Image 1 (cartoon, one colour):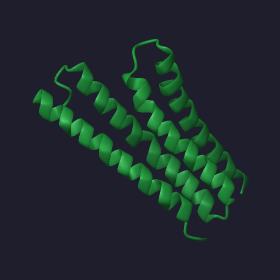
Image 2 (cartoon, one colour):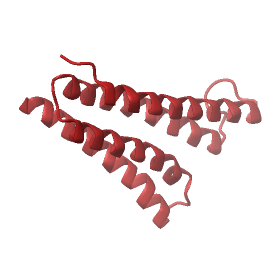
Image 3 (cartoon, one colour):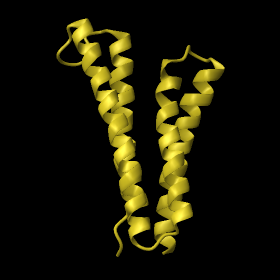
Image 4 (tube, one colour):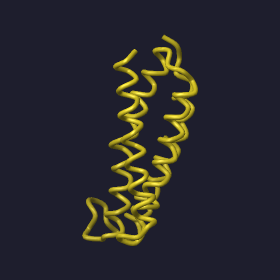
Length: 130
C-alpha cells in the first residue's frame, strides 16, 4: 500500500475549507448571541447546516478515495474524483444561500449534492472492482 499523497493534498484543502466554514458558524453565533442550537435564527441555521453537510459527506468521500489511491488506483482518476469533490463542496454553500427555487440554487446546491454523491458512488464502485 502506498501513501495516498493526492488524497492528503486535497484533504488538506478541504480541511481549510472546513475551518473557514467553522469560523463562519462561530461568527454567526457571536453575531446572534446564540451559543447552542440555532436560536430560531434562519441565517444561523443555514450556516450550521452548510457546515454540518460538509462534515457529514467529506470525510467518508476522502476515506473511500484515499483507500482507492492507497490500493493502487490511477492518479488521474483519483485527482478527478478529488477535484470534483472540492468543487462540489465549494458550490454547495453558494446554492444553500441562493434565493429559493432560483437557477443558482438548483445549479450550485443541486450540482454540489449530485457531484458529491457521484464521487461517493464512483469511489465505492472502484473499490469494489479492485
